[in-house]
Length: 150
Image 1 (cartoon, rainbow, N blue to C red):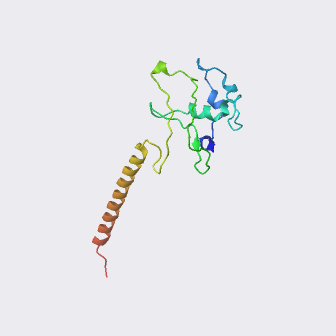
Image 2: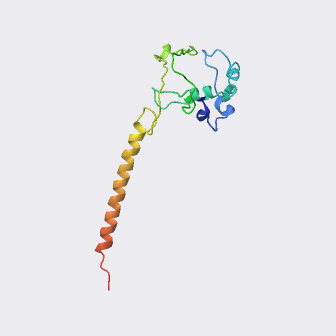
Image 3: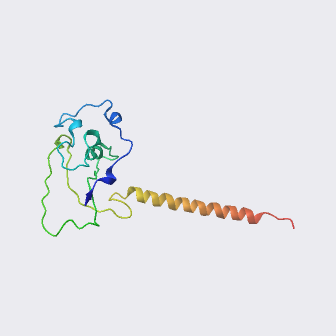
C-alpha cells in the first residue's frame, strides 16, 4: 500500500497560504481545481491537495528532495517484474538550471540521506555529557575539600 498519511500537515489554512499570492505563469489550472481529476479520494482539492502542500513547503537548502509517497512494506503489492513510471512535465525547470529525478530510497534510524542533523546532535550531546561530568567532578571536589566539624 502506498500512503500519503504521514505527509499531511496541520495548521496550513487556505486563507493563510493564499494571502498575497498570484498564480505562477506556468500553472495549467487554478489552485482550486487541483485534484479534481484524481481517482484517489484522499488527494484533496485545491489548498487541501496533499501533493500541492508538500511541493509548496519551503526547502531549507537549495538542493532538496520532496517526499512523494511512503511504501508500506507490510503489504505485498508488487511482484517481481518490470514496471513503467510515467513522469509528467508539469512545471519547467530549465530557467533556473533545475532538474527532476525519481529516487527510490529507504530511511534508517538516523533518517534520510542528509546526515547533518544526526551528526550535530551527536556532537552537541557528547559535549554536554562531558560538561556534565566536569561539573559533577568539580562539585565532588568542593564537597570533599570542606572541613566538617566533628
